[in-house]
Image (cartoon, rainbow, N blue to C red; front, side):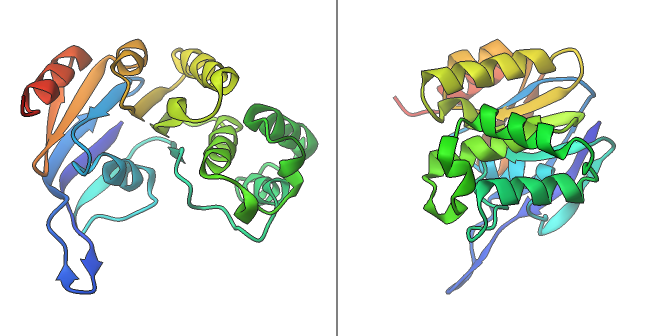
Length: 221
């Protein structure tokens, strides 16, 4: 279970604090429920994913994770650019206490990300898509109760998109999923519930179709 309680978020810039991205957002995600986040560009979808994944912290409010939550798959941060993909993967495996079968985990990550020789090149030489694929593979190499995906299915070629889709389907029996995607078909395929972000507020819907309906109705004709 993940509890988001009265969360506010805004950032500081050169000219002082920005507008509120999120204002008083509250909801509870039950175990093994797949949730799609919908809203216009700038509505705060990726911000909310980073907060839930622990990559960022709220300005006010709290987020309680009563389960193991992945970092956002597709999020390009968290990788050390001067290290190779393999070295980054080794580091992540070790901080998660998985020195055992390290070679097998590294082989899985490299195969899933499909980086080829680039796995042994510095991450700073990667495209944004390659970084996203490495982050996705790193997440899938560990067992979490909830996986977070930020536009992962829009990254890479057809083969990788199919691989990502198969991985999401395989999660159904053992974990939940929180997903951002601009593809309505993708959200309907993998998510049962939905959260519509609009003007800093979050609206929970038990049916992803209802969340998509409200989102589409909010877009000016």
